[in-house]
Length: 611
Image 1: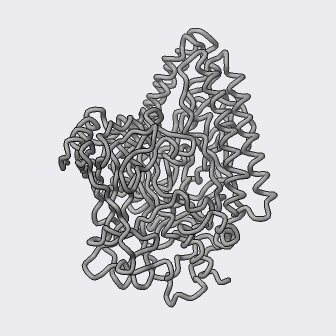
Image 2: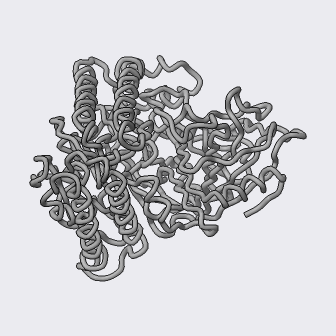
């Protein structure tokens, strides 16, 4: 079977069972990013009408609230996915367009997002982001079976998990040993999962990956995370660690494609935990860099009960300082000379951190031995960039000797080795792990909050996280993947292939998020179980779920028709997806204020069109 026929098998997964993906997956994974063949493109006229809009009933809500957040004019590009891969730098392994919240990064906390500026005209601080589209003129010159830009195999697969230690609140002194023991258990669970992958003859088989590795690992992590949360709740507020349970299989780690280099950890004189800071340059056409600071909580001893609130408040302040600096990196991109970032952003940030770290040490010292040397954690650098410096070490999965996780992580003395680094986007086109070509800026981005045909809607909870589509239908199967591609004027049909549009029509992607919420959780272990899609025919939510404003994001592009016909535009994707159009997806973190969400709900329930 040729590589092109193998792609066609994968592209048709929406119509077959998950098991059908097994043997083809490995070949695709090994190719790491070969361009999508012409078979992955279809004229929109040949796509059947398939979009069903349920009729709004007498108890339904037919309004639409539109938000203008621009088209990423600020050039906020990143390979982070703060929703699905929190704490994993470059965790998406492909580049996203971001609109809305200007400070968001893999290391963001809910609290840090609230103080951010935004690209949305109504002040909405939510974050909306999706994979970029590129034009690669070297793709499909004659639709032959070989590709001159094909990159080499980037090594074996590896399981990667969100960092846990670095996302915790201050750890109470009396339960520190118990928390550390459970953090070590997380590290052991991850090691066992990677051992299973290493022994597997077919690690790309979705049945093996999901049923034998990722599913059991998630269950174990859920239980261990709950033990950590319960232990901490005995002396402090119970942390919500739900979003850190889900792990994923990665291909192309270790600086894939020759991008980046391994970091060299440095030891700080606090708890003997490895720390790291790196400093890279930035330029106008580069991926938007983000701030990287040494982990503070990993350097702290157990915190006395009397100091927990004060220490947590100051750790939150450190997060907000970093978020403010991240925002400034976006807003000042391309400004100043070679030393602008050092003098205007990193220098002031260091001064603020010195003062905050001193307050933390004093608070602990009132009731226990005062920690020494925290001021050595004040200096920060950049996670990525074009010039000099060392590549970020990607973030350890569970804390412990963490060389690249969250900026103000959680204390631990685990001995898990850090994960190999995931490559950073490089060059003016931000190319990464087989995602080649010039990024196409959207011509229009339309963000709508829509009603429900069967019932009135209730407001989304603040910090609700949602994912639509699946970035890995090749390895995970098609159950969560969704057709998104269409052309302007043909929005009554959606294709799971790239579309070829008539003259004068724009290429479009339409992402419809779930419109039903479980009424309790802002996230879930797999980032999906807390929300559901309404019934396609009636619009009704499943039992136990309530209707919320249903988010729709429509993205339009001006792409020349000959580029479409030659199959020369493609989606950024994970390496093993080979730019599969069915891997399209979109992510959302709700940071709307309560007042704005109330306006959205009223507009939608009143059946009006608002903006």
